[in-house]
Amino acid sequence: MAAAVNYYKKVSRRVYPGAVSMAQAHRTIFKVCLPVAVVGMYGPVVGHYQEHNGFAFFVGPLLGPVVAALFLTVFPFRPYRGAPFAPDGYRRLKGENPEDAELVAIFRSNETKQFLWVSALKLMLILEPIMGVIAFFYRNSLSWTLPGPITGSTFPILASYFTLVSRVMDYGFRAYAETQAHSHD
Image 1: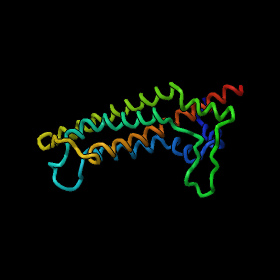
Image 2: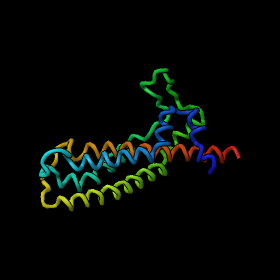
Image 3: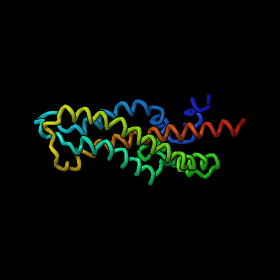
């Protein structure tokens, strides 16, 4: 378990350091993305209160995490993709080394996908009550028309994506560090 706590030392030598930093900051990313998702579903902060959409209040907390989890299920995180905009031309690793292939296998495993969907469910269970409380206060003035693509879905999807991808990276890197610690014992 001690190896999992300091996974960044082992993993940062193998993958792009930005990915390791994002994985380490998964709690901070959650704390930033949660208000972004809520404000995105809330609607306009300035303007008429009649513009708040009831569908965005109740469907947004479900749609955001599900779409983000579906995307990450179909296109799992690839740790050896490299940094496309790195100023030093960070080399794109192939993942041909057996240890590299093991890390790729962790991110494509069923356990990681299960962790992803459990995390998406937890995110839904956090967002839905928040929006339910807000909807209660605006119950007499909610608009029940279908929202446009920006109003009710874009912010929760993007916020959920960044929250989930950082959690999955943390989970994968920790699992890799634990397997490496057990294989060297």
